[in-house]
Image (cartoon, rainbow, N blue to C red; front, side, top):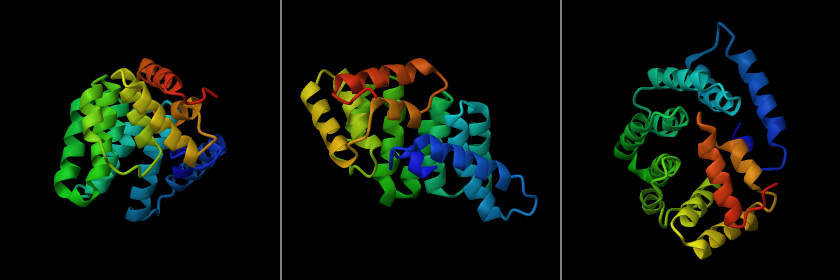
Length: 203
């Protein structure tokens, strides 16, 4: 799931299919232990979102949080499931909980909030949150590029795309569509359009 969602290589569909098969088989086991169940449900939230099953994605995330009500990282990460479902306020609430509870991982949780703001076209707020943060995965410079295009800063947007392609030269706007989810398709459409404007190859 991570290989597909973080764009590690050029075979995402193979990874998604393998993850889906493994999780559907594993989570059906009645003897599954709590740690394995938690890990599986976390991954399943992403797999379901990729397959467009947003209700199941959110249900998986909620089950994980019920198993680990104080786990800041899981809660901060799975704020995304609420974002994908269009539940903006709840997504921000969970990201803020993670920020308060686990400040050492603040850049990650700030990026979770930034994704929410970009989805809602609040580009200046998003850009401020991730200004100067570490590019811990490819989504951060790509998110900056989307923000910069919409803020009328094409040179800054091109710079962020250059950073992405220097690390992962196979990356395309189609990959963003594959790894970024939202129950409303127009959200992803406008982000893909911005990335192409910033210089990311379309396919």
